[in-house]
Image 1 (cartoon, rainbow, N blue to C red):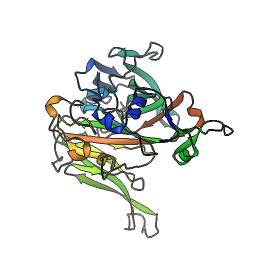
Image 2: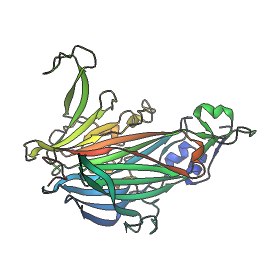
Image 3: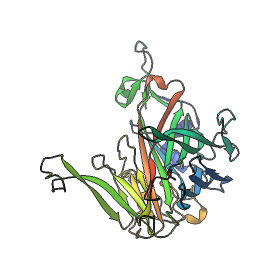
Length: 415
């Protein structure tokens, strides 16, 4: 492509070779995870998180057996496993279209950078210094009149260098039971266009007076997560979609005839494997619950996945990217289904050669009602370069929330 230049890195070389040759390359290779560590932290408030963490070659930071204990409550499992499942980076100009976790890198774990003592200041380094564990004040947890309480959070963080980009994969576990998976995007810009033909596909970054323009090229970061929810244990879980819907039906206190006056909460059970779309108008969230375990008020214990969405997007859904069409998928647990894209050897275990190759194909009609449930979620960010992104890009954070809903019968911070 005339006028196109790139930063010479491992990923940059992959572009030079072309998409066909990259697809033939090995990419990440599944192997035993390393650096197994148990994290068990009692917060000042009296609540507690306990989980295992390790470094896996492809997924990088891998969390297992996460249990939460509210203050004065009982310990219950929340997540069986949790990890990244792909990072899809298509450029608006149409190519390249990276699969940064599986096809186009050695893997997030293999590419993990060791944390220095200064970078993990006040924390503990785990997994050969590739994971930084920190406990920090998270500000006010609540306030009422003249009383308040500060909250704490525990975080585990891994940084992986993929070409010019540095991905900072962080999971925060709050003392109120909330989990916040976060992805920090930093490093250096990798793709530029050197003619005005690139103007619609990025932003000019060099001096306007320069004879040859230099456009930083815009691209998407689609970060896929695999969340094996084990609410209270692996069995008997179920999922429902929660939405808002305007209503003109009379409420107990209003006729609701004026448009915009009233609205209702709508709950839709998801009984079989399914792909789901986020709607900003409907305030879509999803609740994952155990059908048999109840809190002290008699309601099913659950967690709610709450998106924090910048925008929605679909890629080449009719050809090479059917897995890009939706924001969330619900499947029944299958030990061979670990990556959202490229779910085949060598990226996964050699014994899983017959597995469905992407998350779209994994949705095949099995019941997820009262089963061991896996939720796949993609968070999206459009990176339109700006002057301030050079030379070293300030970290851009993207995140979503996994919040307790009825997991306890009151605030986990209450005595």
